[in-house]
Length: 112
Length: 114
Image (cartoon, rainbow over all chains, first blue to last red):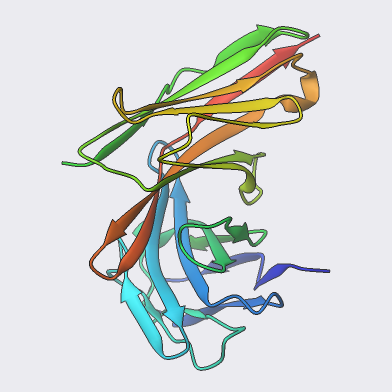
């Protein structure tokens, strides 16, 4: 089944404790991206990757890092999480940014 | 500045009627426009894509129009059903220096009552 998976689905952590949210797709897509979704603010892009070893900042990259060592995986790293990073995070993949985006199920992160 | 506007007020309609959602944009010249459906706590699901040179696109009970002069897209659901209740997002794909970038509107909530 074609899908985008994210782990963990739910996470409660404390300020400053490094964490990684994994994202994996099995559709051989070149384009992958991370979004955060907050009430009243909609979906905002954090980082995106056009292909392996190619990543770029989206609209709200501060406090996040990503890597794209393999085509299928695009982890999101929070080196020192803060409470303002409490949000619902979505990973997405597609053939290109202009085509149909396939979203993962989301990761609900709470930073205390 | 660039802006994508969707009606922030929820749209309530009766089952069987046609729901019409609006997506307006300013300071964009999008090459593509997409519509997604999102259910609470779940990831958006792609519905339709329309290109700048297309006026209208249909898929089953869904219809999308794209007016680049008015800078507006309309999304119609005909013969609406309670199962159509969800938030609908429009997204614009822009051709930037580093390729296409996809920006989402904040979405409009649709409630279809029996």
